[in-house]
Image 1 (tube, one colour):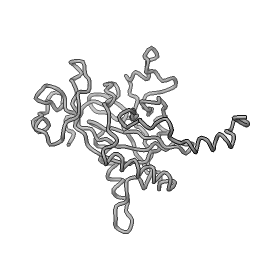
Image 2 (image 1 turned 90 degrees about the vertical axis):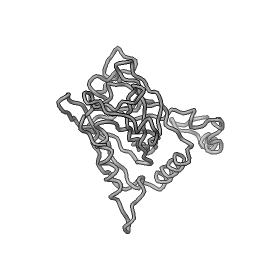
Image 3 (image 1 turned 90 degrees about the horizontal axis):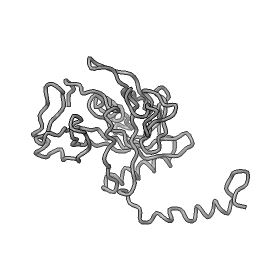
Image 4 (image 1 turned 120 degrees about the horizontal axis):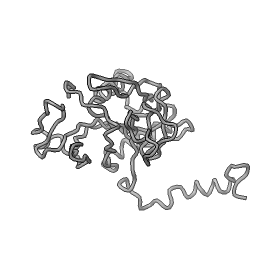
Length: 255
């Protein structure tokens, strides 16, 4: 018998353990799609029933996984373990010309240093005419209620950069004997709250401390992911480019 009362038999459970990872020997990080956590905005396709991206039951302000389509309510939020941070310089075709991700630029490149801010839109424009978007990329582990952990990325751009700086400050305030603890020593809850300016309103991140990482297993998984990213074994693919998921540009936003 393979299963008993819906549970795996001891023999099958042992076989799974003995053959862990078999069949995936040729899989590399470039073969995988890393999910992003995004906030559903008023015009997001996740709210439009006729759109293939529609999420039944989702509402404005909810947080969703771009690969699995799992979502969490704005008030409930999702618990995460921050693992690695980096700022990325991303080049996009302007939305007025169809939009679309072009590629990543080096922060020290001539293209980035020559970018100028459009006084009317607040966008940074490259010499090519494309838009330069500074993205604060937080690699994380989603802490699921069933005890599993899932790799994901929270990318914060434009008005969201303020939230990224606040989160980093929260992390770096955690010390032991005067030394800054690793980012994955503590868990945080990501929620969303409504914000706005003279251009309109949207939902933005709200971040709060949950507490110390719940187990050595979770800590070790996060540490291994950190090492993999640092060694260049995991690369960030093109981010989702749905304009409806992004807040308006804030002209006076400091970089």
